[in-house]
Every structure is written in C-alpha cells, then in structure tokens.
Image (cartoon, rainbow, N blue to C red; front, side, top):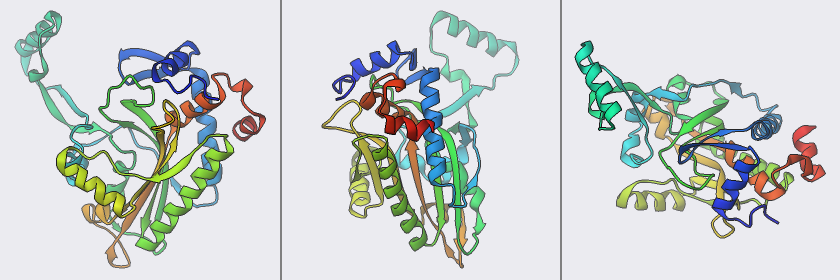
Length: 304
C-alpha cells in the first residue's frame, strides 16, 4: 500500500511534514533532512557493496563543468531546455556595479549586465569524466565510479522532478562487447537490489528527453536500438512510474568527441546511474515515512 495513494502533492506535503525535504520557495529545489540523508547514504553503501569486486576507480567531480564539454558533445543540439549556464558580473568600475545594484533593488531586469562564464552546471553525472579518458585505454578498458550532483532546468511541483539531484554513477569504457555486457549485467544487479528493498521495480526500453520535433525522431531511434533502459518505480503515479535508474550505451559518441581509443579503435562507452533522491523517495512511498517501521528485510539490507 503506498504512503499517499500516488498523489504528487500529498506525497510532497508528507515529505515536508516528516522533515525529509525542506522547501526553498523555488520549484524543484529543496533541502534534505537528516533521515532522508541517512537513507540515501545507506543506499549508496549498498550499491558500493554490490560493486566492491569490480575494480572500479573512484573519483569525485564538482557540480560545475567546463562549458567546452557541452560544446564538444553538442549538448545544445539535443537538450537546450535542460541546460544551466553560469553567468557572472564582468563590469568595470563603480558605474556598472551601481547600475546592477539599483536594478536589483527596484525589481527590474538585470541579466543584461551579466556575462557567460567558462563553466556550466553539470547536466549529466558522467560528462566531466570523458575528457579525462582521452588517449589509449588499457586492454581491459576502464571502469570508474562516483557520485555527482546534476542540474536540469525542470521546475515542477512533483517532488521527484528536481532541478538539482545526485546520481550514483558508473562508467565503462572499452570495446562494444565489453561495455554492452557490463551494462546488461548492471541492469540485472539494479533490478535485484531494488526488488530486495521491497520496491515494485520494472525495467523498460527508454529514450532521453530530446528537444523539439527532431528530438522525437532521435528518441525513436534510441529506443529502436535499445541504447537506453530505465528502471521504473511507482512514486507519484502507478500508471506513469518514475524512472529511478538508467542504463545507457553511448556507442562511440564520447570516444569520438574526446579521442578515446582502445586497441587502435575508437572506444565505446556505457554508463549507469541510480537517481539517489528518487530511489529514497520510492522507499518512503512504498514503506512509509518512518524507516523504523520498514520491513525487517529492507531495514537489514540498508542498516546491517
């Protein structure tokens, strides 16, 4: 039985009342309470245990990336509606500074006094990794693990649709056979973990939210080639379950963009990501807002 009968506002209000999320006044931007963070950390630890023998290199990236990465991968061709560029004040002297201050205090537009910087918010956890892989990979390829903050401009009343969220990410670079086999193995692992946590998860072929009329054709092609799978869990709707994990095969897109090779050929890559906040919300929806009352099997898996 769901906590709030799969109603988005009721679920949001329940999370707030329980202290699990802290509204900021901006849609899709909120703080996380101590219990929320504890569950998230425990879930992250459970994922780490599954991957403990894989030999992945662990690293960490900031929530901002060089703007050049978006330019190199033609991000704005497909997802201009999701991007978050960063602007700063480049004015010289007091005159422009005072103009900026006056406009802000009067409530008038002031963005024209700001300039584009060399960094943007990171729209996909794996993006900052690929430039670091430039050159020839080892014969067995490369496997990297990290947790990253992601930004997507999707303001919404739905608590699962955040503008800033965390993804536990794994990236595999190597030959096509290497990365596809690895992605499919992790799809099974992810489904098994979520099932063990008592979540009614199912997997399905999916597509990225490409922009515009041409984006529909790109999405159809992505689905036809089965390049992307998602794990779906009812969080705010039974008929339209929430994508909590994604498993993606990029083919040679990033290998070509960043000159990554293996055995003299352009390397292929795949990534998988657990949407950490969404998975935690799925647990609250399925088992209730108080983890002390969760089923013993679930509690033991996360707190043992």
